Amino acid sequence: MDITDGAGTMAACVITTARPGVLELAVTGRAFEPAPVPRLTVVQAIPKGDRGELATETMTEVGVDVLVPWAAERSVVRWRGDKAARGAARWRSTAIAAAKQSRRSWLPEVTEVASTAEVAARVKAIVSEGRGLAVALDPDAPQPLLAVAGARGLTEIVLLVGPEGGISPAEAVLFAEAGAVGARLGPTVLRASSAGAIAAALVMTAAGRWD
Picture 1 (tube, rainbow, N blue to C red):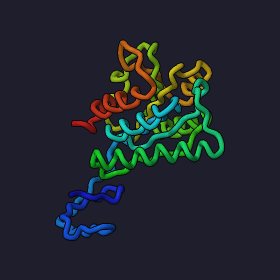
Picture 2: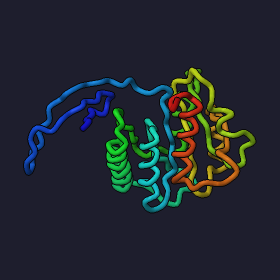
Picture 3: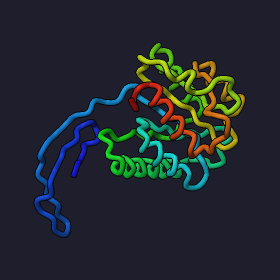
């Protein structure tokens, strides 16, 4: 069996002792996997019900590095006070379980809930470095995602996934001013809970992480 510290180190182990409450392992080998490049962040508008955990699970399995819960203007669900802390904690526990299942050597980071202003500031900081790209998913955008996400040499890519009602016009303007570009996934409109994972898979392939 393999175990990881969640920060790149993977150890191959064999079980030497197993009894109630105790599991002893012998390490037979170690390997270190560098952090993947480009780093992929998905800003996910908070969806209804358990769709947030579903989105977290699938994006973790795909390989997303950072997941930012976003309180979008058109999000039906609102995380405030203790609810915000509980919601982020559920996403984190889901991400850890999915990372174990998919045998990731790097655990994804799940941040606290972010406002639209905070998301725009994150986008501006990344794009201003000159080696970062931010893409706002928009089914009406004139250019496809692969047309803008295939550049090599990027250190970080940010995908902005709106709620079921989409990114609002005001949010779109704010993100564009921060340096984000709009792009569509394809000819159909996807649910907010699935768009992030599919977009992440396309971006990772285009950027060479899935070579």
